[in-house]
Length: 454
Image 1: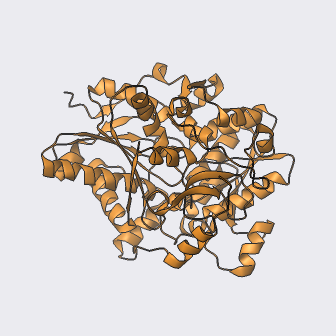
Image 2: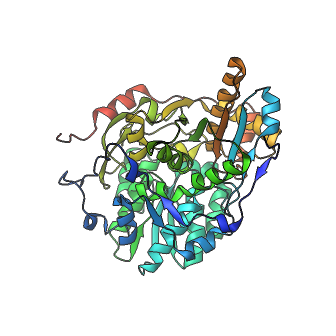
Image 3: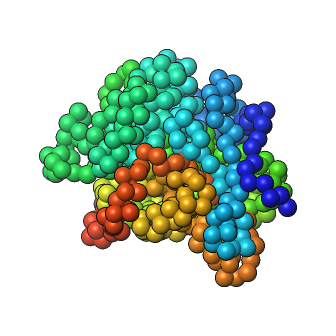
């Protein structure tokens, strides 16, 4: 077996097609519903928000969709991304397990998010769109879309969740460097933002609120479209490039993963690594354990209800069937800002209901402890979001140690933490505490789920 540390693919191995797991599902996904009529959505219903090519990808059941060459040309700036064997972390843990990570922090924006930002911006540009709105939590998605907008001549406006806007000024500066406009959400620029601020002028914000603001701007301006960095089927499909590359890299390594791990907020980086392997299993390949890891302060998969719900707080978006904490739920202001979303991607939720994946949740101090151990072993400082995957990988490796099993573990290191050092400073200063959500607020949010006829 190879003792090599890093497995790099030649540019010629860059995937030419995205993988769409909808083609292999044993049970089809429940359709999204119109927020007014509660009837299944048609492509025309999504036209105010997205260009038609992305709408067709959203509803496609084709197994493979070609990646246009102009998109692959941009991807070559950083893809294929490395698969790395974490020998030093294994040694630090004293585990017989083999730990690998797929490192997505090598992109210009420092995370996996450009894998979908580049295609979304390109398809919008091809449709003649010159303005995009979006939301962002930690800022990884906002900076990625800002980067993509700069490449394709699109003006980008980003509504950033206020608690992250205040915590992460350098991520905001990165968005502005790429030419985007960054606005703290909730804001006074939209009706949905003003309604929130009237009730609570110091509201910390949430991804649900920021989505409402971005969607409102897009829906009320004919020259503007909306772009989402997670949750939707076409976004998860764009991220499949991660798992497709990883499969080839494991062949190079002479290994095959037994456990596949990703952190989950909306579900995109998790799906990107896991879905190609799940698809292989659904087509008769070997079974693996697939673990989705979320923050215990915003546990949609482990505590949420599988039901139709709105994707935003102001109820402007379609209803999708997903694991949800309720669209009015506001999680506490913990530092993994990209995981502070009330719902999980419908496709990820569907696979959880089918028993194809499992879910677990950890508090933020335990995740930062894991991230620090990883940094001191492997040299990379993970983003707070990715620390959840690191924590789960360590738990699995220690389980293997206790059981005397030499399993192969891989996790998606979805981004670096270079713009999140204030969170690490808080951790080392003893100021980072494990925040719980309000059980009464969760109960109220779940009680307010929309009533959808069977």
